[in-house]
Every structure is written in C-alpha cells, then in structure tokens.
Length: 442
Image: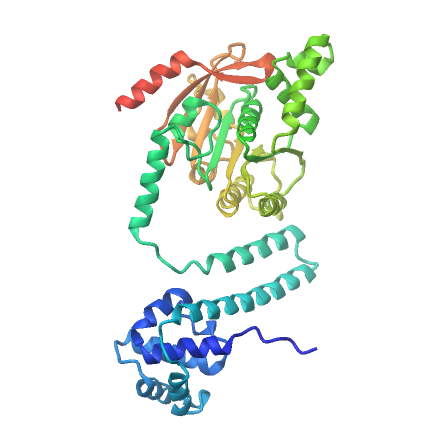
C-alpha cells in the first residue's frame, strides 16, 4: 500500500503566490513558518521560498522576475521549470488576504512530517538493545519536547509580559497566591510560592526531621488539590504512611508503630487514613532507582496527569546514575543537574533532600552553610532555593529553616517547632511575626 503524502501542495502554492502578489505579507508568513525552506514539501517550493528570503535579507524587490533571476544565478532554476511556474503561482492566487490561513496549513503538514521522522528515530532507539532502556526513553522524550518547543517562533511583545505580571501582582494583593504553597505561611510569604521549574533543596544534619518536613509539605500540597510524587530511597511506603498518619491524626507516632492504640486513637487514625487516601499523593519506595528512570516516570505521569505539581526526592545522594564517573562528586553534580532539568521539562517543583558533609560537625557554630552540602559540586549552583533545618539541641523542639539561597526572593529564617511524637512541624508564630516585620522594613 502506497504511503499517503503528508503535504498540502495547493496551500504551499497559495502561500508563495500570495508573497509574489503582495510581498508585504512575507512578514506574516515568516512569523508562522520561520525561515527554514524545509517547511515546504515540494522541492520547487523550497527553492522559491529560499529565493524570497534571500532577496528580502538583501533588501531586494520580490517579484516573479527577481525570484527567477536569483534562482538562475544559483543554478536552481531547473528545480522549478522556468519562469512559467512562477507566473502560474501568481495567476492561481486571486488575493493575498488569506495567506495566514494557508501558511498555518503548510506548518501543520510540516509538523506532521517531523512527527513521523521523530517517530522513526524513536523506533531506532527502541531497537538498539545496547542502549540503556531508560536512557533511550529519556532521549525519546527530549526529541518530542524539542519538536514541540521548536514551534514557538513568535516573540510576544513586552506588553504581554507586563500585563501578565501586573495580573499576578494584583492576584497576590488579593490573597490569591500564584506559586505552589508549602502550607507554612511564613515560608510561603518569603517565597511567594514556588514556581514551575523551581529546584528546591532541603538539607540538614541527621535527626533534624528532613523527611518529616518534606512529607508535611507533600501532604499540604496534595490537600490543595495538586498532584505529588514522593520518591523515597530509604523508607518504605509503610514507614512513610505511619509518619503521615501520625501527622494528620495527631496520634503518637510511637503508638502507631507499636499498635498500642486506644479505641479513640484508632478511630482517629482510620479517619486520617480515609482523608489521605483520596489525595493526589503517590509514595514510591525506590531503592536503586537511577536518575533516568526517575525522570522517565515523572514525565510519563505528567503526560497523564496535568495536575502534578510537586516531586519530592528523599534523598539526592541515594540516587543511582548510569555508568561510572571519575568521582562521587561528579555523579551527584550530574544528578543535581538532571533534577533541575526535570523541573523545567515537566513544569513541576522538584524538592530534593540532601545530606550535609562532616565539616559542619567540626565547627563551633553548627548552623549550616551552602558549602556544607554533601558532595556539593553543583547543588548550590543548580538550586533555586536552599533551606537548612537546624536545631541547637536534638532534644529541643525549636527549629530554624535557614534559607541560605533563594534565586527569586530574600534569604532569612523561618522559625518552626517540631513535634516528634506526631512527626509534624508547625510555625512559631511569635518569632515569625517579628521576622516578617523586619523583612517588610528592609
């Protein structure tokens, strides 16, 4: 069976005939088709469009005679069969008024041909058994994204960005938060809500509650109706669910672990379970997962679920990487870079937990610095936000979230209280109230 030609030759003729009839419409055509003659299917049409573009760039008149002369000079006149074909294009085009309609049609067919070409490349990737399957999937995903992004040829005027910005500011003054809220008011005040593409790192010394804090945020985001995936490289789904049930039910975590619950406490845990099970929250225990496999899963989920807004990774240093690198620092740097790319490609917030190196333990002042990120490499460079959980004493509940880096906002401290029996963080309202006043005065 003969394959159908994916081209609308009449639309191609109408576009070129319109330009020859009224050269002023070329700018409209370029805005839709760009400056690549390959967007046309027929060889003659590619040659004519190339000639028109070159004449325009050289500030030369565009008409049948000038286009014919340029093609003859470049020894390409044989591709169109002489001037007669150019005159036929003009004669068959009564008006240039509909040039944008025909240009859109030409663009549509060109895109379909590109889809077929990309599809063939993806088939070849699938057939190459020497290629890691998740690397092949990631490569296929990139090709599709490039195909889509490559069509964004129009440059919107600055006015469009300004109007959108003013609308966003107006919504925020009315209490309508634009970014992704963490559920911690002072943190959200300082960030304005995390935006699509943000790469957030939460780090801290052992036993500061990093996992619980991330789980609290995941629950808060999901409670707002946004999709969340929580990748755990250390704790199983059951272990995390016990922490989550403690936080939501406010029943002792130790009692939940041991099963020593009263009837009333058991009822609260069951009620919390019913509440949590209806949330768009997915928890996945994934020891040994590679960064490519993680990216592939997130992108697949995003295609199926547009409400996915947050991806939590617990924690960076546990993610595997395909192939060997010269050092662990290089591996972590590459993982960090891939997480940042994932945030942008999937249009989600990636919140990753990180360990600290041992240098912080040797200092008298143990408040973490950016340089304390373990195998830091590019972690601090890639991240849009870096916050450190800190407590002076493990037995205390007073906790500081020290914001050492924020690409789009201030640094500072959010004061929290950790309730270990419930695996839950709450804000220290009095200390944060003072902190907010100071920030407003700056």
